[in-house]
Image (cartoon, rainbow, N blue to C red; front, side, top):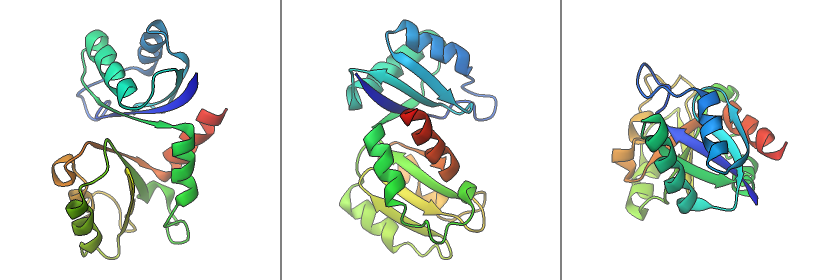
Length: 178
């Protein structure tokens, strides 16, 4: 059985799609997942399962929708995949505020033309780097009015994406390795 990092998109944001982490852990434990742990209230989980990748994503989406009545998109990474994300850290020397440094985890790799458009976008002083199924984004002036954030939507990217700030990414890796 392998440790998996599970990211739920779009829960507990505002008043919609409210999901308590306790009931979510209980649901997943009843469904047969082991050592289920949550981080924060925004849909960050670590669990142990024989099921992996897209199969695990779809299974979790069905379980959550069927029992909790919300339909979040689920993105899964192995512990090794998340460790590689942290090790890669293309903006570690400039991103001095972890809450303004985000990683978008993608359901699939970007189409080559979308990746080229994103790389060519004039968003300075923000920075962006695409590596496989992750997009690293540094927002030195904040996320709220960021022109880069507007380019990182599912519609613009053509794939599902869920973002986590650097603090959350590194804490998830610690939790997954514990």
